[in-house]
Length: 174
Image (tube, rainbow, N blue to C red; front, side, top):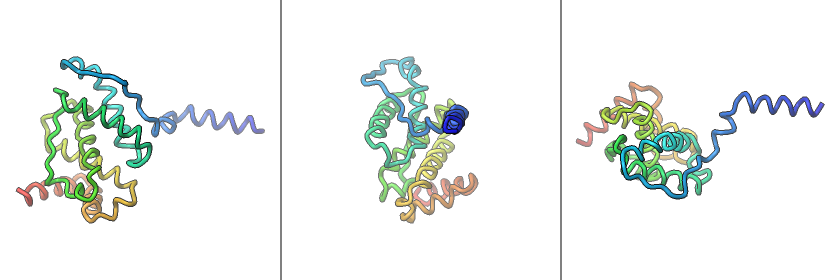
């Protein structure tokens, strides 16, 4: 009888491999350097994998791994010719109370550009950054105490509201 339940459990894990992989920290190289556009291109799929993990993993879980992966990603982004990160602090009032959300914003922008191979649509890229932040803080109860975070969460419930929020923040602080 125990063998039957074990077999069902193993089949379940095989059928849904993403369940086991979701919290698995990506493995980044101990040493890396990028000297040309082709060097950056070779690591773009690993960076995309890291960005997906950073956007989906709990913010305060596995901090050592998160820091290592974030460092790798941020160094890659700093020199990448294919991804352009343009941070407008007017869109990020929630980072005053939660500065760590700046990274989540950057991760969302970069992931959008890597997935869509577009770095010319700055508005869409920034909105995707805001979506990444809202998805992350949705799982973090402590961050929902911030008025600015709650406002972002309300706006992120629909693309239209989030788009309006984006334009309002830009115009208010112009």
